[in-house]
Length: 84
Picture (cartoon, rainbow, N blue to C red):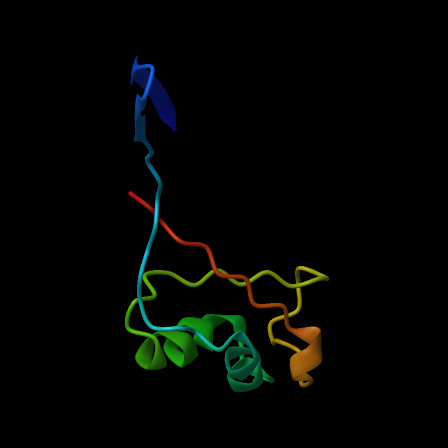
């Protein structure tokens, strides 16, 4: 933000921010939908229900696991927003 004093009784204030809007994504439901799916199928599971999603990245530990866990509480869904 920027504050400029124009005179003793007047100040100009300006501010800038980044924001985004879109449909709320229920991360708990996404985790449930992904249980037991292969890493390759994750995009096909997430995108149809969330049209604003442009990409899906899946990481597992250990890395060589081809499938996601069968329990939703072991799946961590993180959402990153592009503000460009």
